[in-house]
Amino acid sequence: MTSLNTLWGLIGLGNPGSSYLHTRHNIGQQFLFAYANKYGNSQWQEKFLGQFCTKEIQGIKTHCLFPTTYMNLSGKSVSKLCQFFKIPPPFLLVLHDELDLPFGTLSFKKGGGTAGHNGLKSLQLELQDTNFWRLRLGIGRPTHPSFDVSSFVLGKFFPEEEQDLLAFQEFSFKALDCFFTSGPEKALQQFNKKKF
Image 1 (tube, one colour):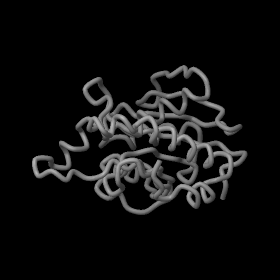
Image 2 (cartoon, helix red, strand yellow):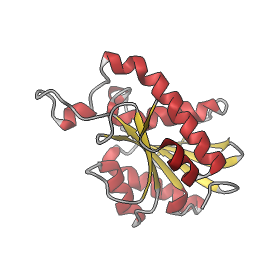
Image 3 (cartoon, helix red, strand yellow):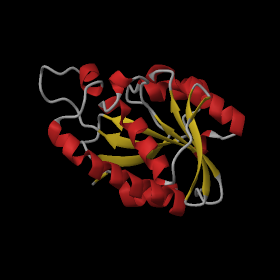
Image 4 (cartoon, one colour):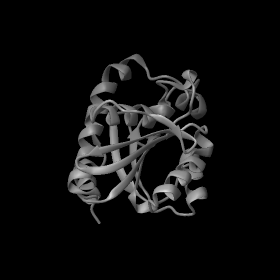
């Protein structure tokens, strides 16, 4: 299956509110907003329990959504989008933070488990399907004993990571462009577990 000449849903997971901006858990939302804006000024509107806009990305009609339900209820927002536009799960691409990849590494994946990610759990619950694509954005795991996982993912990037965040974002854009021009399988081959 390729993405060519089809309709896609592009989802960026995160939490709403200014206190969560630029945190690790919101990297999916952050990269989604920047990627959509790459294709012209976005007219985001409140719809489907989230922030929504439609883009032509590499000639593909793409419905972009950031759920504003909080992470653990993301599926309620995404399911509304899918029902309205009749988007089946295999034509969803979800951008999310990934603890099990080092910072700056990305990986495409279709289906599978959630590795404890509450946003993905909610999507699977509401869609009753695991067969959607993910772009896993590596944030690494906490190495210092004073950091538990929850505090780590809800915390802001370290200064040295902040310096590289734009390069990581640009690298993810290349991967997304490949996904929409050449298809998911090609993108997986070229970018799987690669670092910017």
